[in-house]
Image (cartoon, rainbow, N blue to C red; front, side, top):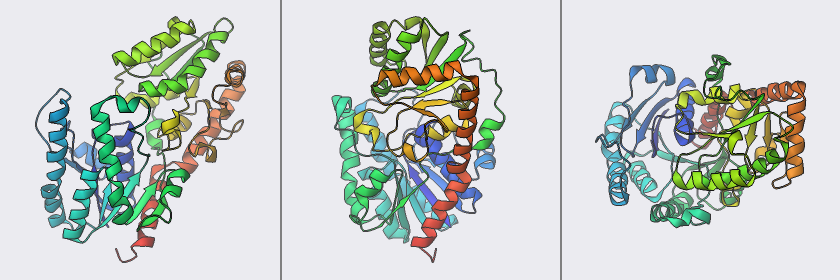
Length: 406
């Protein structure tokens, strides 16, 4: 079975959608499928080389090769998105000529992408499946503040025309999304592995991470909050830590942004809690070093997502957090309750209930045994539920069930 991924967004990369595409593609390839990735936009960062192919088992092609180091302005960005997606036709034609394509797997779902996918499916008699990993939240909260995000939202919400009428399989990452589409679309709805882990990435990590060594504190805490909206979930942790700073020796590292607005909002919250000297923001971290940051932390904080996004997807870092073997403090949103059990592989808190945050933090600060046992159980949870080769085997089984002749 030859599967062509059609995606948008930077590629390759460690985090977010790029990592998801890499691991699903690699897993499918290692389970016997022929896989090719077409990146419609943005501009090409690096060409696929032998090292990448040998590691992952598939090749990727960008449709736009122009060199432009700066982020394009709005009109130029729109131009690249349209032209890049239209150029998919020529790349696909070349790929199909060499090896007939059976499945078009679309990641980064928008009207333009699905229009192209549907035309290709009709021309080459292929099937279309999609990875639906969030709801359309671009018109809520701070997202509606920019024209770029509004246009992105229009592109995504318009794609529902194709999803409901022309897509053969809609793969969803949580039960809320599954309920949105079950019985309301022409195609089938299937659950897909929501977060993926490559065990080998963690087997070779050195427990001496230089990114965290800037602090000599007894406890090094780490959380991920890469956008301003993510600070919604960080705020209760800051409040809880504020009351504990005189009792425990800790330092919080936030994998975040150096964006001016982001830093302004964070500064206000740090000042409110007298935590400025206890917090460091790490931005633009080399992607290959992120697992090492998780492994070398003493406690991982899993911030609650903002209301407009909480149940719309599934946090991709779940598998990475668990696989690190570092204990986690988390709220429960999306389908996290299927995998995270308080007192077994994590500690669960209630959003905004500062006493539960403080209780969880104190429990981990006070007990090395608890930190170790929760971390070890978390690792087992990751391997049982999110290992990418096993998880992508289920994708193949679902495709075979719907299209038995492919």
